[in-house]
Length: 248
Image (cartoon, rainbow, N blue to C red; front, side, top):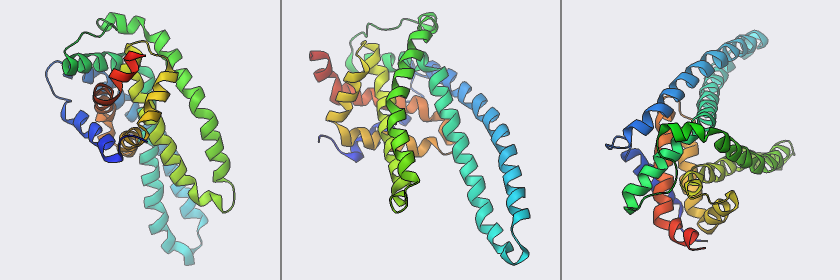
């Protein structure tokens, strides 16, 4: 198993550092605006449910267990914030995927000095939305069986203590695939090649995806996660995956 977790996480950090570089900023702005708008909509919706849940918990606890309110309420609000962060990130990934392909294209051209025969301009990105959505659906169908398996484990006595770790590991793996797919899709490589490439560098992929999954659940900070992850995944592609994948 090639690579290591720290190298993968470092790619994400490098992506954060490149967000404001000239030539890349315009491809960061649209996903950023979309993330802010969707986060606001999800936050207002989810917060109403969280507020109702808080009132339900407060009303259900007898007076002698009132001290539990101070323990449960922060957990409920934190969980609501994390769900909002994850939800807005996933929606932005779906809605703005063609713009991520453009960002990956520009980063790869900057790193390699070679043109990428992919999308040319915003109009081409918009026209590519139907194909991009089908690609996202392909990733979703790959994810669902594994998610269902972890869900089953979550309800199995004894094994369910492993559920939080399994969910995080699955999220880390899928985040790695999700973002590495952008530069590889620019070369029209099939999703099976994306899986093979990430499997060949599984620890690096998990380190990268784990960093993305962790930060994407943090409200406000998650606004910059997507473009940073696209840049980081493209650096990963250029450094470790590109030569082997394109030689096949």
